[in-house]
Image (tube, rainbow, N blue to C red):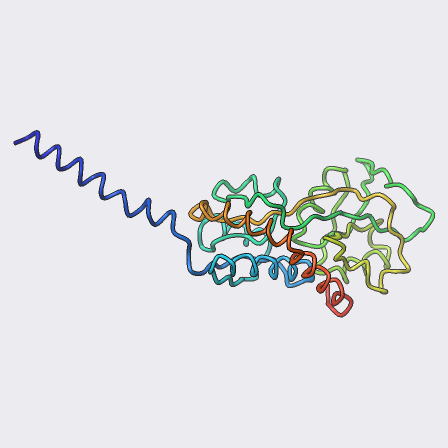
Length: 247
């Protein structure tokens, strides 16, 4: 009798685990994704991902939050994922799973006042160069620190430009993502962009690990959107509208 009880208990224990396994493989009906800003590059990423999720019959909505809070909310499971991050940033959040197909690629440009400068100036420990960076652009913050510069944070790229114009900083770091950049605006044309970017980066979409099974499906759909030209058309449309957008 004791053996039978153990036998049935084992079966029941096994059955009790089945629903969890089934639920893990099911796709959600909707997801909420953290975004840090409503700027043109974010708009492009949102449109690409909305299209990808729609093909999987999933409704995607977004919630705007400061950069690190957005990561924490995605990592803790309060939200289903984070719009895009560079890999080195996401590495610090163990509950985030990367969607392997690249979402967007970008460059970090150096902007100075003097058109005669062609190379990145050297920063010295006893008198570090001051560089304007947009708050939340973590690659800009990390690059500044890696180069021994003092990052001066601004809430928008307009403030970044103003800091440079007013000589409050020596230079500025400005991102260009798939050609989407405030540097295309005429307000920046009197300033000088150094020929070589200070960094290049790839942005991936990240999901909370409870949606780990969805990451592979999304990567396949993103690859399809690339092959079909849907992604490039979205980027083209966003680039054409960026002049009227606020950074």
